[in-house]
Amino acid sequence: MDSKKYGRAAALTVGSLLLVTACSSGGTQPADGSAAAGSGESSKTIVFSPLGLKIPAMKNLSEGVKGYGGSKGYEVLVQDPNLDPQKQLTDLKSVIESGRAGGAWVIAVQPAALSDLVKTAQEKKVPLLLNGVPEDYGLSGMQPGVTFDKIDYAEQGKAVGEQLGKCVNEKLGGTAEVIFMVSQAGTAGKEELEKAQKEALAATAPGARIVTEVITTDRAKAQTDVSSALQGNPNAKAVLAVNDEAALGSLGAYAAAGKELTCVTEAGGNDEVLKAVKDGKIYASVVLQFEADMVQSFDNLTAMMADPTQPGKQIVVPQKVMTAGSGQ
Image (cartoon, rainbow, N blue to C red; front, side):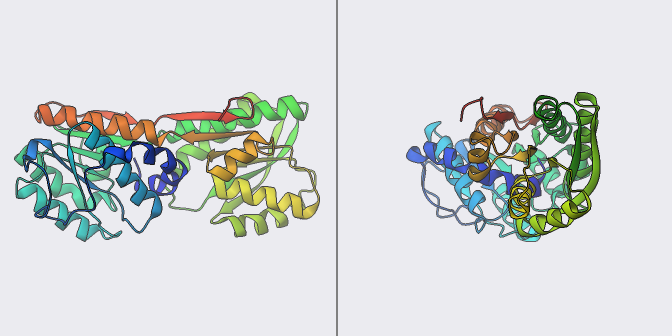
């Protein structure tokens, strides 16, 4: 899946990942795995290279991977690229070429920087689990011994748009002025997500009309910008939000203006958002299920390790629509 989106969204579910760390196989390992404990058999050793351990979500995810791997009898060596694509490449190349690793799970800082590494891993028969799609790595189609994991932005956007449409029909009689909170240019999945949001909203609630767009960068700016948007669109009672920052910022803006935000939906689902869903302040959140994704990713990688020549797969991060009545 895309690294930027993964890094942001992984923070939403890392608490659940910690539940599987009881069988953890140890701490962070050096890049070459030279100080690793265990059998030393590459067939049972997996390298996990996240974006960088200074990101709390990545640190916690690494603990989850070690715990799950340990429970399955695998040794997991964690590398720390520290958001440096060249360091990530160098560290991975070292451990793969040395024969230390039987497989590698990589959340690429910069997928294009790892194109040659994919070829090296295939030559060494070291299977890879990579975020994104083959084209991100300069590849054409699926590859032997390489599985790719992505977020389905179109599916995510459709769910967010449909849920807002349902809210408009249910609470606003099918008619509403909508503030559309979008991502900044260059954000992963922006076009797919926002196109699907708009199309699904129009199909579900034809009487809903987007009156303005607000570019979301962070929560504070989102609140300021929505406050400004409300001055020009005082009758807007619905917000189609791209992420947690947008949704929470919009709630703050409406509260500060003394106005009611009747309908808001979003993609993300951090703890604060889920509480707002439970309390009825946010109608729905489309939440990526990273615990389930961790399990399917690890299991796909170990299956390839049993036969590195088999074709890889394109897997997708599971997602779930959370509403006040869905239970949390």
